[in-house]
Length: 92
Image (tube, rainbow, N blue to C red; front, side, top):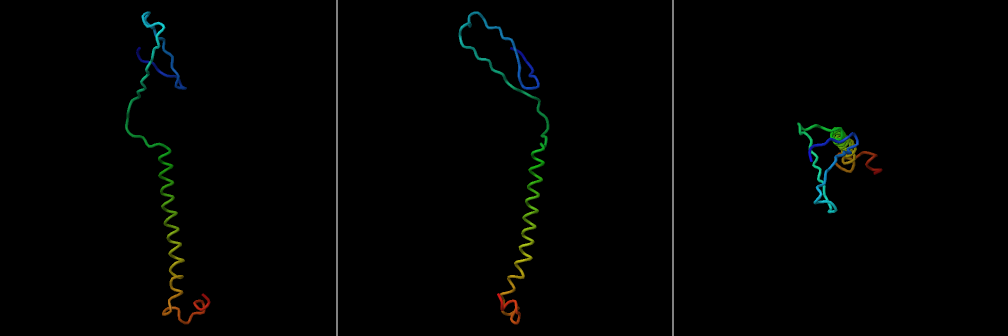
């Protein structure tokens, strides 16, 4: 049947001559799509995904840092040997 090219919307048109012996029978046309291969190309979606992954890691590190800053003083409050005479420990 030969080669053919598609238009901008992906449609194509090709005239096919059916032999007289096949008239009236069901016919099938098979189109195989091929395109040249090249090196891997990074898509915009991959860039966006990597940016969001890095952003998520930084948010996790920020949350861990803030949690440590709050957890260390709170963990020292109930200790009797370090906060024995403190009014704040008495209130808590």
